[in-house]
Image (cartoon, one colour):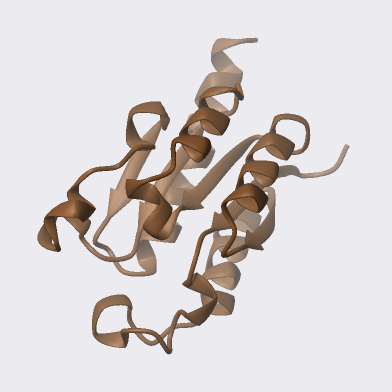
Length: 153
């Protein structure tokens, strides 16, 4: 049997991480984020499949794929956080845990960023720790998956 798998899903503009607003999001690239998550997960016996898209429907497709292919999802929905009922409904429709992650502290920013359409249907939310938040999200997700596995045994 292979390693358990997590999905890392990143939304719009995160392909520009490290170049776009480095004062807000830092200088690390999306590839740096993916390596961080893969290393963190691997140390605990998990594999990671990473996906980024600027298109809402593609993100929905990957959330749906997780039902069959992953133990859980770590997602940075980026700007779709505040607007996407489609992502919310996709998360609600699967049985896998989802952790929402944001690099910046969205609660210190513009008021429209204070609302997450996804948070109420996610297992947890991590904000404001820079890209290290992805490491924290990975550890939290694995803890969630492992504890749920013990509870269903």
